[in-house]
Length: 85
Image 1 (tube, helix red, strand yellow):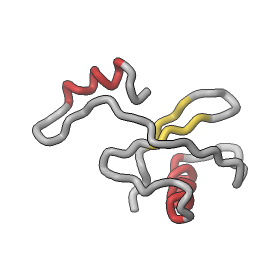
Image 2 (cartoon, rainbow, N blue to C red; image 1 turned 90 degrees about the vertical axis):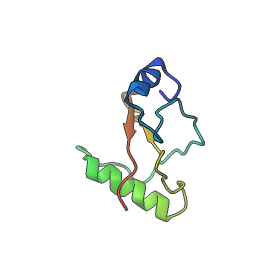
Image 3 (cartoon, one colour; image 1 turned 90 degrees about the horizontal axis):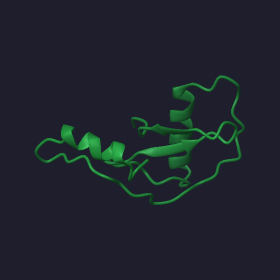
Image 4 (cartoon, one colour; image 1 turned 30 degrees about the vertical axis):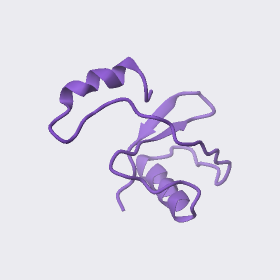
């Protein structure tokens, strides 16, 4: 996702001082706990990210951060913007 042609297409939305371009992966983390409840909401995921950042398991998000999450049950990748502080 970070180096796909789709990201290249987003470059047309770049503005002076804010360039959209390909990114890079800086690490991975596999969470096995807590087990998610059925019907997980976006706010649940944002809280999970906040908790993992506070615990030091994830790096704090910067302006150019994007967390990618894979659901191990259906193998789809879901990008999430960092939660608001």
